[in-house]
Figure 1 (cartoon, rainbow, N blue to C red):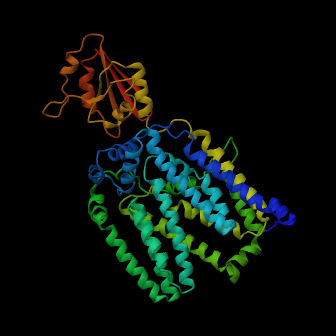
Figure 2 (tube, rainbow, N blue to C red):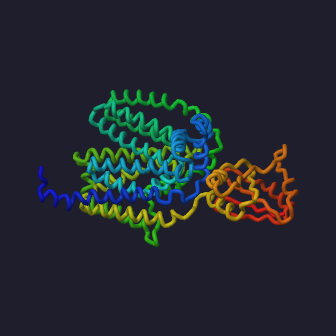
Length: 497
């Protein structure tokens, strides 16, 4: 079959452009997720996950995650990843980066299948989303959570469409059950998000009087609870008693700014007011498209997009309101916990942009692409400077400057030794626990026996090992110099006799 010159010209003028843009942002998105993957030091939460996932057997890993404030799926998958590769910083973070890249690719495939502007805008925004990039480079569960919440949103919209048309699909319900279970075993906000999806579907079914669909949803919900039963006791009984979530601050307006910034990073870039530009384009777009917005909300031809917009909007608002109410009793809201809303926020903005009839589609794609590039420039100006707890940099400092010095922590500190283990070719150093008396007080005979001019190093972190002020006062009386060396989130104390 021959291709006519006209069809080739048409592709070069129109089709090529709509393949070039996603190709460029696919390359950019993958680059951002892997570039300088191990530049930042693993911080406390990452090291907790990595060390537990590095245990010898899956049984040991599962037991260790009983003290974790989140379900074990990420830890289990990371355990097998480490078994196949290693537990080096690049390796453990590459698991999250691979998951994030997979999410990016399936969003691209959704656009290539639908050829809808909404899916193209969503892909462009997601490829450069600060939260998606940041947590692609962290050995925690959030990249996996974004993947499953994205898949759940797609199935949710499919089910909303089925309810509107009074149809049921066992395949769709099965996907909802599978993705819902995976999300709930990834993070506790996964189960919260899933609960809101169920309530939205039941509410819509009641309005539409789809009684058979309600039966399916109730049956699916019961199966979901049965599949989740191993975590229910931990969620309802153990989690409220733990002190591992006491650090979460009382909910304030900042947490909502944080999730917005994770989604659309809009801080100023070289004095360019990105927020002001976005706000201007938003209101100018509304002004220029008053007629098309009216058609979007009332024209029967826009029913499907309008239905998606309404339900995604309701999902976002209800989730934010309900979690804020829960936080009045027990604070649970952080920007990263709200990453379940990252793709829904991107999608609702993309639907809104698609509803604009002005400017033309190609111009809209160019504008969205330029905004996305501005997001990248904005967050990368500081992103590639070390800013997490500097375990890596501290160990490098100790290897270089204190190679033969004894190192002590107040309590058992495995985090430093992880990085020393990564450097066994150049050092045999290990951080050990400072000797203690049976009373629990430090045994300071070690300091009394030191030779004049000799010194030791104490390491202190807020995550594992903090020396009481009273103990530091006792030690100061036995040494001639007590020097503090601060290294971003970590303190070294150099005690010289």
